Length: 116
Image (cartoon, rainbow, N blue to C red):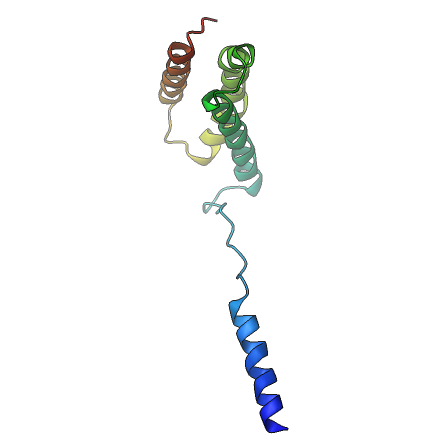
C-alpha cells in the first residue's frame, strides 16, 4: 500500500514539475508610466510591425505596397506611434523620429521602385 502511495506521489510530482510555467509578460510598465500609454504604444508598434511584414513579403501586391508606403505607414507612424513613444520615452526628439521614418520610407521606395 505504501508503495502505491509513493508511486502515485512521485508521478504527481513529476507531472507537476514538467508543466510549462506561465510566461512573464513581455510588456513591463516603466516606473511612473501609465499602463494605457504602454498599451497604446504596443498597439501602434504592432501595426508598424504588420506593415513592415507586408512590405517584406514578396507576395504582397504592388498596389498594397504603395498604399502602405505612401499613406498607411506614415499616418500610423505620426498619428499613433510617435505620440505613444514620446509619452514613454521623451528623450526621443521629433526630428530623430522623422529622420527614422524617412529612412524606412526611402528604403522601401527604392527597393520597390515606388513614387508617391
